[in-house]
Image 1 (cartoon, rainbow, N blue to C red):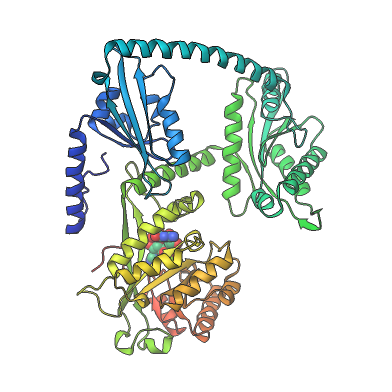
Image 2: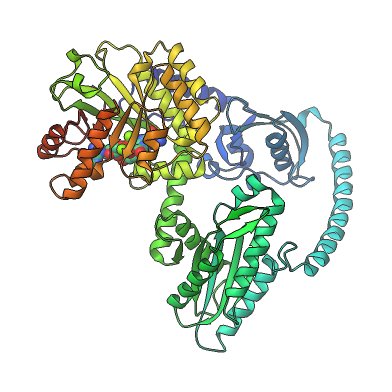
Length: 603
Ligand code: C2E
Ligand code: MG
Ligand code: MG
């Protein structure tokens, strides 16, 4: 679908006008004879015009989202557009080159490229112009012959180089840091182990081991300490392995263990646990104490015809699952893990597309007063705005309309966005859209506020607070109407920058709420350290009211503590009148949940 195609949702006149303008622009760009392509920073086609379709003789649907290089016709020099792309993305400088295409008759093209500096990472615009008519036939032939000669020379050089590289690579089967077999050595061992499966009973287990936070060790203590840790890990792994197992270092902080003959998956799990235990023992280096840990993914097979690469991929997928799991750091590959992996890949792709095509929206859920007198409640609202059941604001919740398949769960979406860093682009879209709603509007009472969820990654970005405050000022928004919800479960890493950003935003009147309060590992510690205005008690506690007396008492004490600290206290996930009454009796002032309204459009 064209990124400029009309959407079927209700859109404001500004958005409709924008779409019309974009539609006209696309028609104009499609009408020109130069082929135009835009790729992302990875070289994937984001957009192209009709002349490009004609140039490569393929409809646009088949080009979008694909790497640009294989789409292009070959030329005498090999792959000039890739070179152009690499130059453009690496140096971020515009440039141009002329190429001759292997077509009948010979065709000369001029390729210009220009990164879009206003975006980060920068997409690249390519313009391909047919300049054959500018060059005489004689010139064309002479150039073609010269290029052919160059190609033959460079082919010979390449072949020689390849032979030298091969000879060298054959010698190197060991990792230079740990002395363990490297990727090449591992492949040989794995092929051999698979072959041996046909000669004897039992299974082969592949354990993909990945150290946790190894990058932090390198960043904080330098590569020398990092290398020493890798040597220590390889020693510990070797010491704790059964006699017929082998260990290799795949690269970085990844090690692969081949188990030798085992009975079943549980035996592989037992080996993994033993390795983990040994790895987890404290390690002292240059006066620093380290407690290494690692995640392990396992794949087992009894099939001698199994593909080595596929087996490694499965173990890697299981490791990825273990790494993301809250309670288990070892996982045995199975169909459910594979399904979850594909689901998260789908979320990733949809998110990427949605950000590119701006195919996102916000749903707004009301936040209401659940006390008769909100003034008693540390609420920043005046008495006139308070009163049981009154809507005091909304929370903006991001929604993504997938291009294919079922809707995407927003919690999963945010997890993936945070994992990949795309939450920065997503979050900035959410802020811009949210701020638009906060601009003076006849239907919104003065006390109306909007809560926007932000990720710690955004807060830790340098210039986040300054940028947001600038926007607020430029849009003439009252900063007290903006609430930032910071999720307590995804803890700030670079605490200092985050806390400074929060403090600066609060100094200017923006309010900050600690979201999902009570579910994190360090709720009370954050309460003491973060400059905040309120807490949002997680829906897990609301759901437990009337069912779980222990949690009910915890809820009551969280509310009391919040009020004692002079904070606004909001309870989320209120679905029943009983829950509302219980929270009201506990003194909670503000509530949100299906009882008052589901996320939807703003009134
Ligand atoms: P949250 O901030 O705690 O948002 C409240 C979630 O509870 C929303 O889920 C909402 O639809 C759901 N909810 C509201 N009332 C009820 C109820 O009565 N019962 C139950 N069972 N659920 C209720 P949603 O929209 O799926 O969002 C999930 C989470 O995703 C949010 O939790 C928030 O952490 C994150 N999120 C959503 N939008 C954004 C965003 O724009 N940026 C960031 N960084 N995170 C976001
Ligand atoms: Mg929230
Ligand atoms: Mg919440």
